[in-house]
Length: 191
Image 1 (cartoon, rainbow, N blue to C red):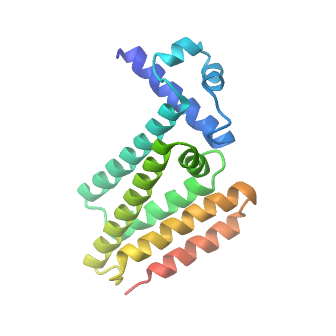
Image 2: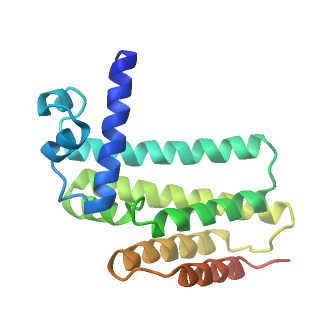
Image 3: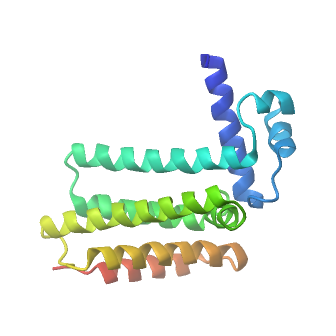
């Protein structure tokens, strides 16, 4: 693909992500994305055959960026506790910012498409694995003392996902988000 083609591809994904965050997965059609991008449906079909294909690439790209960010932070020798706190705060912000949150669209995609279910499972497992590794790294650096890192990681991820679902129906206040964030950090505990 040419540089121009790559830019168009990325533009389509950015616009589609915004639309999915605003309206959910099933409410968005190829036509909606094409119109929002200012291109023809034929032009969009040169890049994607379906909204499912777009959405899957959005999810996979976000996962790759998160893994790269974590690897870069570890390579830069940033303390594990700082990485852990940053990860949790960003994940909570992403789950509670209605303009950015696609968690509910991911659940909707998973409920309606077998590939979506596979991606949701992969995303959840990767999130738990990343968080478990960070908790264990904090344990190794004596910043935490949590031998049950995988269970704690699962609990934290499920709590954040629950916040996203709740926020979509009954918006959380900044204070509620702050309280829940502090509870998550208290569950992680300190030495």
